[in-house]
Amino acid sequence: MSKSLHDLPSYSFGDSPELADELLRLVLNGSKTATCASYASYEQGGEPLPKAGDQYIITDGRGLEICIIENLSVDIRRFDEIDEVWAVMEGEGDLSLEYWQDSHKAFFEREGTYAPDMKLVCEYFKVTHFFRKDGAIAEFV
Image (cartoon, rainbow, N blue to C red; front, side, top):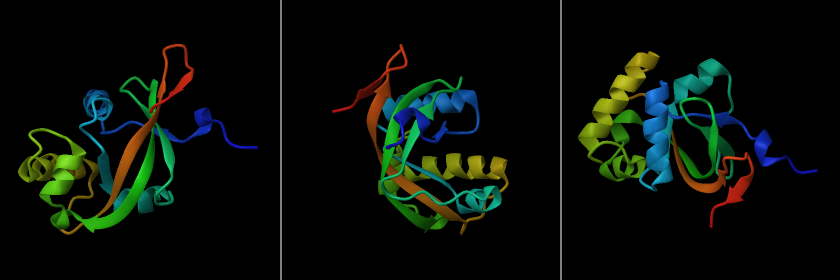
């Protein structure tokens, strides 16, 4: 029997309710199609690395289920290898590499994992479903 979409692992982007809502808005308007996390956070948490085909429920800053994303590809890159193309795919700020570097350095410093050559788990994704207000799932086409 296949797993229900409601049983998928879930998370919100960022490290605060406000950042979760801000980044979710970028996903919903199509600006954000990529994200990254520190490789160290997976090692410390004992979590398996994501892979292409993995699906996740994305929640807002209050923990409400909003949409489902599916990873199209997952790569390991160093922080200092991130380029302008990746910065645009993450969809944040003014889309510049400088903005990406500054905001992500601050994020990873708060997490306690920042180093210029730190390894990142870089996920490129697409939205596949939306949750309706009644909790039903609508497929995104």
